[in-house]
Length: 430
Image 1 (cartoon, one colour):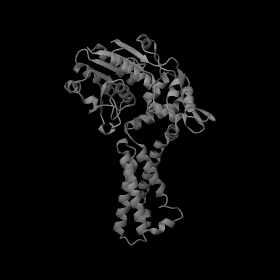
Image 2 (spheres, rainbow, N blue to C red; image 1 turned 135 degrees about the vertical axis):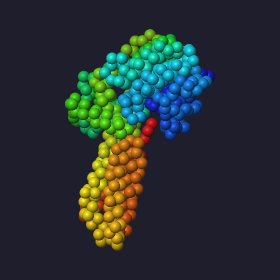
Image 3 (tube, rainbow, N blue to C red; image 1 turned 180 degrees about the vertical axis):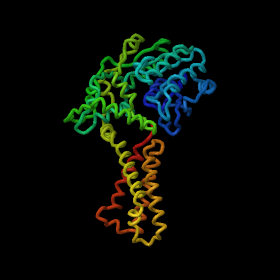
Image 4 (cartoon, rainbow, N blue to C red; image 1 turned 90 degrees about the horizontal axis):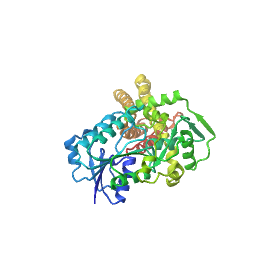
């Protein structure tokens, strides 16, 4: 039994490759950088936890011990705190190939449209990595998929679902953009064929179907696939607004949020997602299924519709919580006397009241800022729940009259607890 090492095995494409390779009779090892994401339900027979960008040739040689085939499904969309495109797309494959024994099969999953002269660093860095692999002594095959549609919603596929499920509205974004798609199973089948040796060494082929769809029409077809009624309004999204959204998503990217709305994704969609299925057919593989067959093969159940409808609510919930806690803390810091007057009739001494007001205000501001940072979002949401419960307990003990206040200062804490719980449950890694 041959052993396959899948890089980026906990990603959308990597996980699909692991399942297909395991079903095909290979012994599958996975490599990822976050151990907690490597679940027991994975088909991999073993896991290595590494940051791919930190592995040198010696470390790669250790990772490749006993490995017959490597499938590189690792990638990133844009530079950020956790991602360096040149390191992951170009330097990493170069170090891997230098450490690999001559003749080892390497299946590189790149992207349709890569070119040294491409408009984004995503494609340019992918092109440098593909070139390094092509120069190596490995027995290589490079597969370049178009937009991958899969049962799992992540990145661009999740964004399409969310846009398609907006209530009553269908956003018309980049109407001149044409997008080709591929079912993730067709891509993983091509990976299995390459691993078996059914695709000749030195093959570089796009993995895509024949038809390119205008982006608004693709969104409309996904809406129909979800089982939602036709939109009452088709709302054009001006290019300047789209560019502004991309810049905002880029800024959030430096706080750890890897949004599919970042400027790289917008540029890729503006340029279109194409690909030539001819070389794949010439390699002897059947053509990938078209969009209708792809959607028919994907589940469109209640949980799909629920996820799509709630897609944009999670970032809105984070923004509302941040604003609520920041304003609460800043107002208390700006008017500590007014904030302290709420407890003026309690039995607490003055110094304790002032300490509670200033300490609570600083805590509020810290939580309001912390929830915006991806790394601390879930911890901040839990902190908001804990602090809210302390406020409720303190108010009940020392100012019980606040429960009957017409403005409901204590009652209004309850929905904020629930919203923080939704964020804590909704934010997760793959």
